[in-house]
Image 1 (spheres, one colour):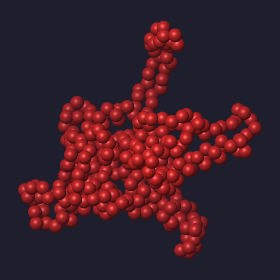
Image 2 (cartoon, one colour):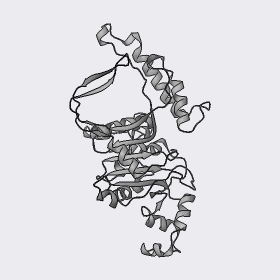
Image 3 (cartoon, helix red, strand yellow):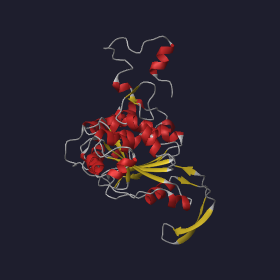
Image 4 (tube, helix red, strand yellow):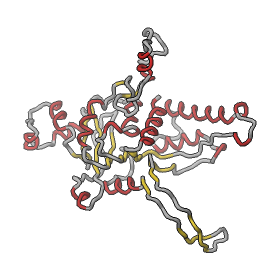
Length: 346
């Protein structure tokens, strides 16, 4: 892992904290990220995912693509999002990328109890446990071995109560430590997404992350007057995407005319909140930061007198993150995930 502030200070024989009231103390929670995130340094904080990192990696060993979701932070009794479990034999037969499907749910939820309660005694015996064993023992032994609604279930401890922002966004934005090194792309799908994804969907969408070199070509198309003409297109290099998401459906005005409050309302609507509801604290903080940054950087007081060197911020591109595809191999993708994660949780 890279050097962090504590390492740099210790090399110079400087204590990270002068005392417990030191406002610059590097042990303060706001200076560290979860150890389970792929963005933490030596100084990190615990997470509910710490106990399932090893298991999650084992479950995804041999997988090239992971299709995953989560339903944490509440006592759930159902998992509405469905998929199709695939053992990989068919994909291997056709030489296609293997797809693993996985869902993170609370270990002490009603859903977990109901699912484990339906496991036949004969199946429990194969795992060297009896029907009389307590729930905690069954959860520990069966974790990563049960399939529900097409998802291999990963039971997460202490996840029935509302989670911190660090834990809420960790699997969605920075899942690198949760998957085996064999995984090269991962597709996260929100539990409330209205379309149930399949492994074939994951294969197709992840295949759009890369495009080979395109030679010079001539295509036919209409000109400004509607007449069919020939267009010569130049050669295009090979391309790889670090992240793939969908654009926002409804779009406010562009450029300097954009109203970030309108964007906020659309984003609240996207995640199931009513636009006229009180703006959540974390959303308000993010919006106000963007507004102030745009106002400050675009102000004439800070702009050079040279016209060619003037730069302005235009916040005009917004995404829908109900599903997100990550490239798990590119370092640029890793850096982007960490920047995105830090912006949301810090």
